[in-house]
Length: 168
Length: 367
Image 1 (cartoon, chains in turn green, red):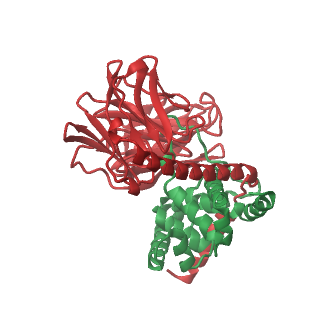
Image 2: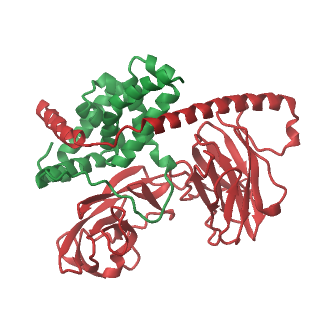
Image 3: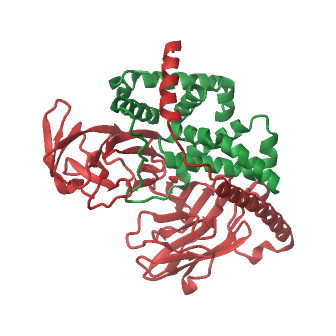
C-alpha cells in the first residue's frame, strides 16, 4: 500500500481506537486484553483495507472482529501455573469510593453474564446500536438480540453484586 | 424491561466505559501486523496452489501419509511423514501449508526440549506420562507463526488423531525415544483443534477437546460426558488499589481458571468438589502490579470445602479481611488478596450459618 493509503488508514484508526478499546473492555473487564483485541481488529482491517474502506459500515466490521476474537481468545491462551498478570488500576485520584464501588460492581455483574448476553448489553446499551445493527455485529437474528439483551438486563437487575449498590 | 431500567443501565455503562483511557493508537505496529497477515494469506494461497500442482504430478505412495478429508475441502494442508525411527531425536516430520518441518528432541528423556524447524525450543515433560497422553502446545514460537504440538502417549496408544476446525484429520504415529512414545506436529496458525482421539489399534481409548487452540488438558473416556460450558466470576477484589479477579472457564476441555492473561487448568477428569482432607487448598497465586512475591501485594485462589461460605484472613499486622466463597459446577472457590509487606498468620473458615468450619495456617495462603 502506498503512503496515501497508510495515511488514510491511520486517520481511520485514530478516530475509532478509543471506542473499540472501550468495547473490548466492556466484554473482557481487562484493559490490556481490550487493547489487544482492538489491535487485532485493526490489523485485520488493514490486511483487507481495500474491501473494508468500501464497506457500507466499516465500524460494524471492526466490532464484529472484536466480539468474535474475544469469543475465541482462549484458543491462543498458553496454560500457565503462576498468576502474575493484573488488572490495571483505573481509579483516578478524583474518583470517590462510591463511584469506584459502583463501577466495580457493574463490571463484576457484566462479567457474570454469559458472553452473548454481555455482548448484546454492551452493544445495545452502551454503544446505542439498534437491534438490527447489533444483530449484524453479533452475526445473529434480531429476535436473538432482543432475547439476549432482555435476559442480560434481567440478570443485571437481580445480580447480588449490583443489589448492594442499587440495582440497574 | 422498563424504559427507566434501560436509561439507568445506559448511564452506568457510560460511567464504566467512557472513563477508560486507552494508550495512544499503535498505528505503526498495527500496520506491520496487517502486512504480515496479508503476506501469510498470499503465501497460503500460493502454497495451496503449489501443493495441488505437485500432488497431480507426484505418485502419492512415495510418501507414507495420513490424510482423510478430500483435498478440495481443506483449508489447511498438513502432511505427516512418519520417521522410520527417532534417529537423532526426530519424533515428527511433515509439511504444513508448504512449510517443511521436523520436530527433534534433545536433552534428558524425562524433560527434553522439542525443537521444530524455524521455531524456538519448547520444554516438554515425559516423566509423568498422563493417561492416555500428555500433550503440550505452544503458539508463535520464534519467528514461525505455527503452533507446535508435542508430547508423550501411553504405550497402548497406537495413533493419535487430531481433527482440525476446517475438517482436516491429522493422524500422528507414536515414535519411541528415550524410553517413551512421542507424537509431534506443527499446525497452521489459524487452525483450531476440534478434538483429539487416542486409539489402541481400532479401539478408541480417550478423547480430549482443547482449551484454546492447542491445550489438551483433560482426557475423557468414550461415552464419558464432560461438564457443561460455564464461565463464572469466582473471585473479585482490590488490594492496595489494584483490582484482581478470577474466572472459572469450565467446559468439554475440563476445568480452567483465568486471571488477567494467565490461566491454570486442572487435568482431573472429574470436578474435585472439595480439597481432600482440608478445608481449603491452594490453587494459584501471584504478585499484583508487577511486584515481587515476597513483599506483595498478592492475590490468589483456593478451592474450598463445600461447607465454606466465607473466609476471614488475619494478616501479620493484626488486621483482618473477609472473602466470600463462590460455587462453580459444584466446586467452591475463594479469591483473596494479601496487601504489600503483610503475610497471612492464619484463616478462619465460616459456614452458611456463620458457624466456624475450620482454621488454616498462614502458609496455605502464601505464594
